[in-house]
Length: 322
Image (cartoon, rainbow, N blue to C red):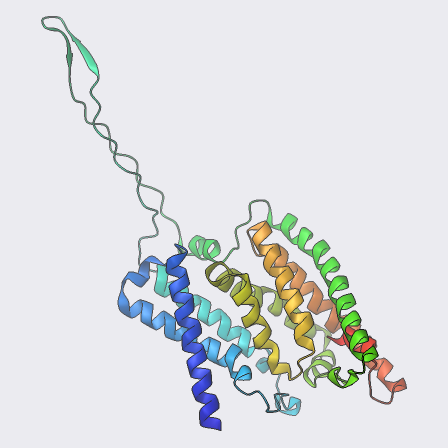
């Protein structure tokens, strides 16, 4: 069975990397460095490795308890997957763009013009004049190319985009929590209370019990890194639907399906926010705000209420912990 899960993870990872490669080419986002076959192949393997570890491994383990043993988790391990995402983005970008000159395609050379010159002996005669060569386009630094490729350059100022993200993030937080409460209430009323977990996944209270500075860094890291990978890297190349599916599947590692409802809704909100604003900053702000409010305020307060519920949660209280 373990061999079958490994084979499924490998197959899904390679399929995901191949889909990314083909859609990049189809959408005109193919990096110039990938004209070199070994660069293209290595970049695909790097992406497939990250997808295998961070996205498809939980999907290939359906029917097996996915909840991590929190007693074995150290603080640095909380950031391990994010570090792998950053490394994947960096390697993919360098393979695709480093050493490619950093210049845009030069404009076409205009055809020689034939002005009419006045000759005192022959009257008006044409003479071909070679136009001066166009100036070379300015060189674009790798840092600027990186920011452009992954959506970090806004049409307006960064503070304005972050402020918009905070406002919209508050609205998204309220909307998603209300949606989860409605779903939980409907399931409960329809006799499907078994589908609504009665306790949060072990990782949620574990993180909520960490020092404030760690929870703050977890929220900030999730906002910056996950948005960079799923919305800045994947979304323009494979679309909102697939990038949202990958984002939701990656969160199966929490071990509870009910959470995927809120996670999918949030991913769609962030995806369309990026599509609307054409940069990542509003989605980064909204994502970090949601995680920060949950980990710093909502989850600690809700867990205290467990003392009066015998360790079990109502459907509505559970919705706030998602």
